[in-house]
Amino acid sequence: MQLSRRADYGIRLLLELSMLPEGSRTSTEEIANKQRIPITFLSKIARQLAQAGLVRAYPGLGGGLELGRDPRSLTMLDAIQALEGPIAIARCTLHPHECPRSAFCPMHQVWKKMEAQMVDELSRITFDQLAQAETRAIAG
Image (cartoon, rainbow, N blue to C red; front, side, top):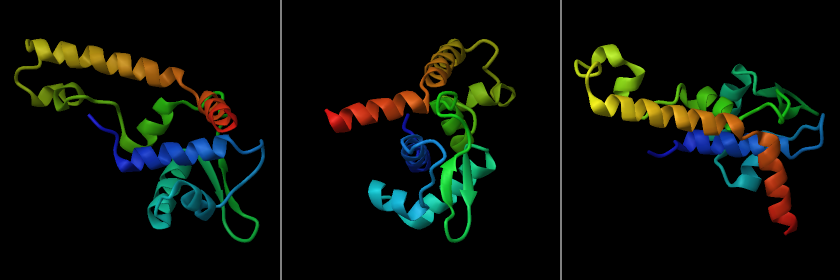
């Protein structure tokens, strides 16, 4: 299993915004240059995150992007679900009615357990924690 490029870039965008002083904004172009992400793709991701309420976008001169939520309550799970939808390791766990084996398949329960563990872990990691770790790594 691998995160999509969209999720990777979206998480990096949110991390950059989390590292800004509270109430500060930055441009999509600045983040794109710093993170080496294509600006057109990052702009689409920023719009998707804004629609989910995770980012606020201000157009025009003096505009830019800022976090839409407190980084202490914004989690990796929030970001991934906003960009990718629900966490699902296998199609049968997301749509059990489509699999004739889901009621008795031993793997169905394994996948459900793994998903629950992943959701639990991702819901514990906040962007404030990630920003602090990034700051320590840069200072380090």
